Amino acid sequence: MKFTQEHDELRRSMARFIETEINPYVDQWEDDEIFPAHELFKKMGDTGLLGITKPAEFGGAGLDYSYSMVMTEELGAIRCGGVPMAIGVQTDMCTPALARFGSDALREEFLRPAISGDAVGCIGVTEPGAGSDVAGIKTTARKDGDDYIINGSKLFITNGHQADWICLLAITGDGPVHKNKSLIMVPMDTPGVVRGRKLKKLGMAASDTAELFFEDVRVPQSNCIGEENLGFSYQMQQFQEERLWAAASSLKAMEGIIDETADYTRTRQAFGQPLLNNQVIHYRLAELSTEVEALRALVYQSVEDYIDGTDVTRQASMAKLKCGRLSREVADAGVQFHGGQGYMWESRVSRYFRDSRLGSIGGGADEVMLGIIAKLDGTLPGRSNN
View 1 (tube, helix red, strand yellow):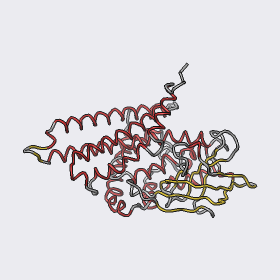
View 2: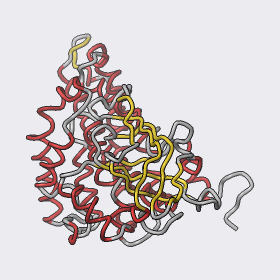
View 3: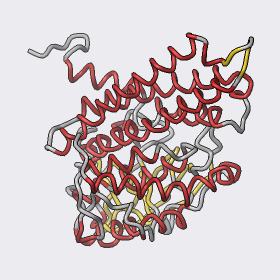
View 4: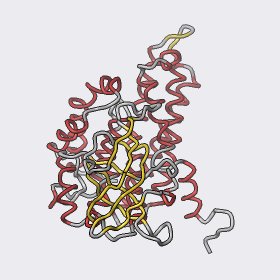
């Protein structure tokens, strides 16, 4: 990956924004178990940080995905997991299909305000009975005149309590499970949309997570993104960006925990010497740093391939799998080497331990990533590459 002066300027701008507009407030947002999404996203929109890869005609910068990756990597400097995840939903999870396949009218109504920060979006895929099994969703959108009438529910929806609209995956046809679903834009103030309880989670406290219900919700069929019944395919493409985002956003966060652990063990005395002098500690931190750098190389190469138009499902799945597992290793080592201080609720490593655990679950569990990789490599039982 070759970075230009423009890449470096974007990285510095994002770092300054985090330092002044996010990190000073993280502890309070964690205590409140919510952050002011509209206020923060408007500031980001005014700074041009929400539409880096989005079409210029709808307010975006129209840059390639390497610029988005630079911003995403810098998000790892935020001192919690919930706020960067919520930002990622806005930039890389609920808007890619809209930007790529949505009609001009849909992009004017929903994408432009998302880029400017005047609207908060969310993505509606997961249901009580269908998480990683996207094909198993039950929410329906049946036709009635020129409208859809939507019934069903969604679960674990990031930004769900503050969102102005949802990019909703629903069954719209009678065909095979991979060819009977559509992505539909639904304003959250539409009659019949019910926001359930704000879910209390193990980590990611600053990010609001909702259960949502749809009871005879009526929206125009023109709110369908792209072609009807191709929603599953569109969502799989969105997952490529979501999983690259997950891997890129984990890099600086892991480096921060490794550096903080080294600093703590350098100053913490035990048995007459700094803890860091113990080979088991400085060797382990060196090993973890090496793993992070190897993951960065995979992410950068995947981004280059993605920009060139290559299907990076395999690489993105590998990066997502690796970042989830490596984050758990870094978190565990950080807590262990901080000792009792690492076990305290208010410590950064304790927060990271809680927040990072979602990495192996959300956006496709580790086991799903392994299944995708095995399928594409032809290593599933009964399959071959021939």
